[in-house]
Each structure stands twice: as C-alpha cells, then as structure tokens.
Image 1 (tube, rainbow, N blue to C red):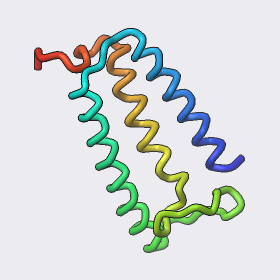
Image 2: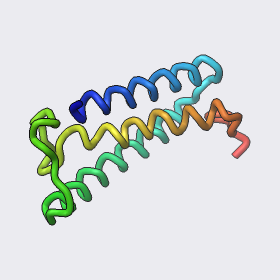
Image 3: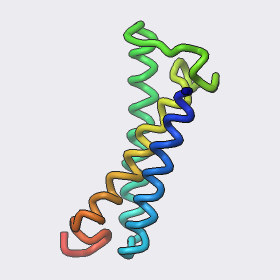
Image 4: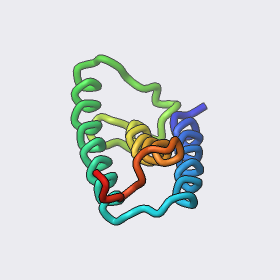
Length: 106
C-alpha cells in the first residue's frame, strides 16, 4: 500500500465527517477564515520541520511507496495529515456539541 492510498482513506473519512457537520450547522465566514489560517500555518510548519527532520536523517521514505512529488525533501504525502486534521477536528467539534461555529458568544 502506498502512502497516497493511505492518505486518501483518511481524507475521505475527514471529508465525510465534515459534510455531516456542514449539514447540521451553519458555518460563518469568520470560522472558515480561522480554519484556513490554522491550516496554512500547520502546512508551513509541516514543510519546515519535515524537511529539517528528513535532512537530519531522522527518518526516510521507501521510494516505492511515495508518489515522487516533493516539497523540498518532504514527499507531498506528508501534507495530507495536517489537511485531514484541519478538516476533521473542527467537524468533530461541531458534531460533539461544541460551541456553535461562528457564534458571537465567545
């Protein structure tokens, strides 16, 4: 199994949970912007630290299990995890009865 297939499974699950959350609650522009900023920062940190760790030889990837697309030294597959987290965690928060998304009752 390639990392790309494994990542696809997690991204599909995250997208399905997010779709259910979207159907149950209204989401404000402020919330979408907040999640987008968090995602961008997480992707940036992933790019920096994954490249540092790979460059230092802390871990490596079997070339047979990756797509061959890289951002620096990091395979593109590494970026699916922060993407899945940015989709899944806010959706789970909504579904678990957390604060209404975009409410002004902060």
